[in-house]
Image (cartoon, rainbow, N blue to C red):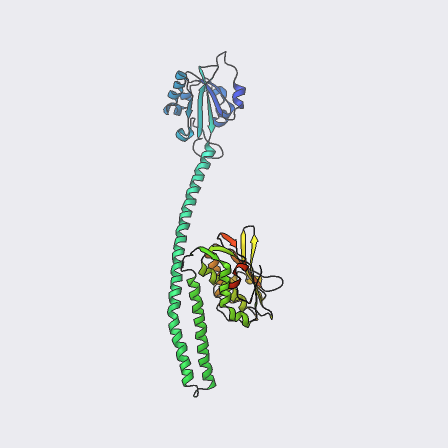
Length: 401
């Protein structure tokens, strides 16, 4: 080491990277502790040796020529980890295989222009992590594509299933109509010749075919709810509900049901499907009303995430254990009350709500009855005061303004 060169041992050992000092002949002048840890070559064994002889790969990969240019022209030299991978053939740490991936910089010392400082940073772990991230990203993209493809297949199959259900249900109606008609004709023409037991058989045939026709009609409605695209237009829910209540007026009056209607918003949705939604929920409330003073409350509540619409009744209520099952097609829950129906209505409600990007659920209030609540993933335009539609409100509705 030249006499004018200060003792760099301490300073080099403080560096968190591998570091060495070489002279213009590319001989090692100093060598820090980090390089000793990496190579098992002690400082005293490295100093005085030619860099190219100690590490033949340095010469083979033309590093020596680049370093010589450093001394000739004074411009710093960088060996990128991305291009050259490693400067010294050092085994990586952390149990990694191969060579340590290094970022190497070489520059002349300001006080000794005939000496150069070479620093080596270990980028092995970062490169391994980057490679792992690339692999994981490729796997995620492949999984995304597979999921997208699967979803497209499911959408197509569901569409085909809905189409099949619709066609099959439609084609089944005519044979059932004929069975019902001929059974009734037989009963009429041979009524004075049949025994009570035979008449009972005919009645059971007619009753069974009628139930089957009701089931097919509901199945058609369920399949039809998914056959057409959602035509999103501004829909005044007050108008929708009033039309539904007007269609159910006779049943409401026969049961003396009190209807309470909150001011409802205008939403972007499919008017036909939203009408079907309220038709089924209100009809369901009427069907399960055993109270001497039946009441249906069509409401709206404001939540942090938006509005929550609902239909609440004071009927027989629903056991919380069946809160999810009731929305499945043909679901018939155990009950001491015999109620006619096919179990399709609420599954249609769920399909309509889902097609509008919302969710539907049922709650069982402490005071009894059932409260069906749902959201719609559609922008709310405004809440329309029912007073402005007073002429359209059936006279048996109590409007809360």
